[in-house]
Amino acid sequence: MPKHTRDEFMNSLTLEQIEELTSLPAPENPDAEEERAFREFAWENVKVDIESRDEQVPLDAEVDERP
Figure 1 (cartoon, rainbow, N blue to C red):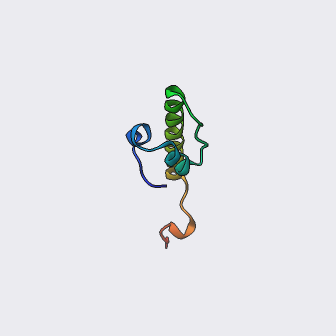
Figure 2: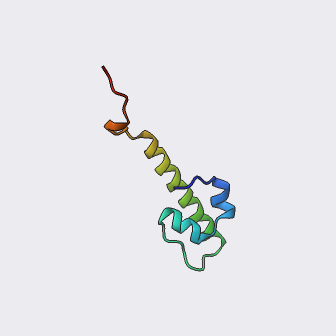
Figure 3: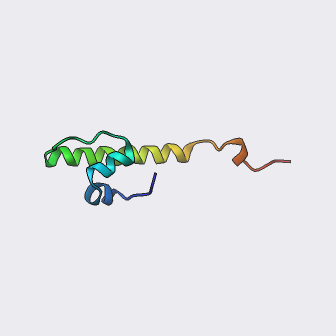
């Protein structure tokens, strides 16, 4: 997933771009509150995905060989 900031999720990216990045279905014709909630939810999901990825144990091939 490309790296984006919270500011981009909240202000720059379109709902369609967020949907494409996260696979979360964007609301159709949302009011301002629904759009903000979707953007916040999408951002939280991205943060969880990144944290989960960073906590994963590396594959055997990625671990340094030990004597």
